[in-house]
Image (cartoon, rainbow, N blue to C red):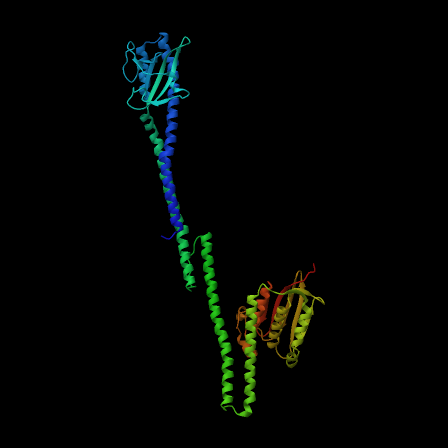
Length: 471
């Protein structure tokens, strides 16, 4: 049988209850028995001393007759369920509440020895075969005129004392039964609150392993198991979203590769079979080159994203002047800006602002942001770039006055391959990966990037970097 937590609890429960039963039946019983015998013997001994100092001494002093003494002691013995004897100094019974004894013919006790008890207050025996069962016997000497005249003995049957022990023993058994009941309730609670939820969680994990990421665990209490179930539900949701994103990603990649490849193949076949006249071949070869450049750019962007994903924690951090990097990036777009009559307005809070970051990747961030700003700006417009220092952070913003981003699309611009309807007409070569690369790089630096945009007014991207401080 497969080992489970519940089986272990039940096995432990059976072992503990078995040990508890034997403990109550043997160890506890013996302890209670010895304690009850000892307490009974103490009471009997105190009573024997009282009788020896009072009733018996009166008899030996001649102030009380043997008959009167027998009647008083018989009443006392009946009340306490004991046997009281009075022996002379020879060890002969002259009074016995157990049976009638003629004082003139005392009953001798063979081998009677007052010192037999030693340091003990009591003995357990059948008193020299006088009784048919074991009795607890205590003895007190009777002194008169500085001499021992006899002995008072009190006997009580062991069976009678055991009867007094029964209520105590029943209480122990009742306590044991209550412990068993409470333990059973505990095991039931373990089953309901731990074992059953764990089984359901195990089943859920198997479902996830089989690819059923839509499987959801029911809600549990706000405890460790409940939080574990909630975490698994969250994990399955994230994995499901990731799976959907991967499917969408593959579909987008396939589409973006298939379209230009189809165009390239079609135009080349048309040129080869003569469908396209010789005088028009240059036009269509330029289209093939255009599509080839688009495929090359798409491939490079995909490789960039993959490189960022696999090396998030391996940035080449170094201090550099962000103002100088921005100026160099702008210079690379000089030809494009001239053709569109676009100007740059640069505002730096200081002549030199040193940041601590990965120079190559931050250059790519700025290149992508400036490239987007140029693409979506109108002719004869201005792009504003600002760098401001605030405490330990440096904030860089790139703002254009172009077509803007629709409000419903702002939250999606960071997704891979996403393009707004407005951008599709403006950016024929775009792959929809530029802003995804920007986001991944900024996240790898553990920094933030925000966007503010109004359709028809323009867009502003602002990201932060850590200011370099010399140590």
